[in-house]
Image (cartoon, rainbow, N blue to C red; front, side):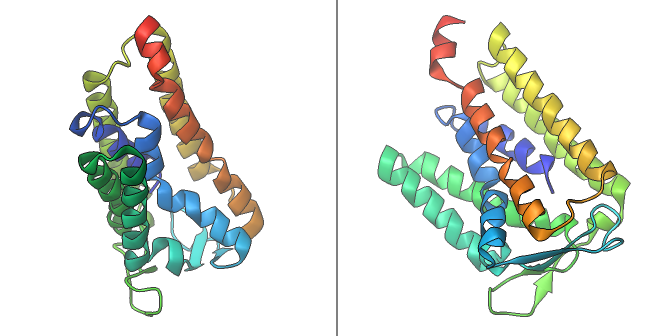
Length: 218
């Protein structure tokens, strides 16, 4: 899942308006932001296998640290704990931890059975929605559109310049999603990892949209 995670992050905005969109994106996509790093370090492995699923040719051979349920629970706890250490806001910390954890449950809908429950276990789960491109697009589209509507209604993004940044982000996310469907996968594991690192740009973009200095003078 890709844009569905962003949709859920945006949908969480009214639950705590103090949290920046950048932080909401960071939490909802935290697992996929860690994954490229683990690939480059050789801790996890992915292969290009045409026909692995209809939606993506990526065969997620091993990603026990970033995408096992126990691993994601650890990262969710760590994310929330670090946020609480700096902000002393338990409500926000719990919300962000829940967003990190939500990543695994959303992924379970689309992945084939390649998601481990425990890093050392061979038992894997997944509902395989990626075997149907239309069903995948419908599910992600519903979550993404709902997130856009909720965020737009409940935030200060309606101000002109901020609104332009927001809708440009939405356009780039949709474009990235479409290109991911129609284009061939990067040719190697390292190429996939380096491409994945570009997801950090969306985090930065989220902070840019929600920057307080723009809220006060635009």
